[in-house]
Image 1 (cartoon, helix red, strand yellow):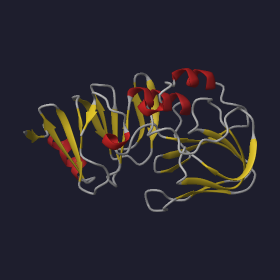
Image 2: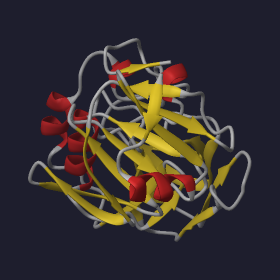
Image 3: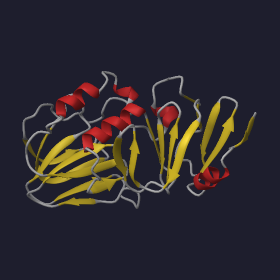
Length: 244
């Protein structure tokens, strides 16, 4: 048996995104009125929440999330990002800290749903790549959905191609002449790119949530997938925090 959510303003904010939230005896239940995700429960209390987008500072570090409507922090340390479209991103505390460290608190220059792009100053490997590698667990299932579907050849060596699947997913594809390398050995969802021509990042399908992204020629970029899960109960490994 469940009762209505305690914070009426949060309930209204989520309802505006097509999400129904209810507090239950065991935590919180989330349902998508737009069928974006399967019903799921969080076995932790809401610690804080806000509305808006952009800079989000927690644990002394800052990360930027373009386009969010609501951000909820749970007592467990996990965060729920909610977008106006009703899409979500459930991110662990480690996922937040890793993304904040990877981006160094800088907002992305482009975004395509859960794929984000940062412009870099040059071709040098990320100076903090070893720190980032030490942060990553051996089991990817705690940060991202499954092992990456697309696994570019690892290593800090530039390779020249005409197209490249980015973000660990074949649905995001960079089209155009470019060079790429993997800066963090254990993170195959993140690539550094040098554009040799104008590059178009395509998503299947293109829509208002996943618009096409154009990268200028002769520039350097970091492309990565936001840590987390868009359909937690179906994508996450079984754990005490989340259940159907």
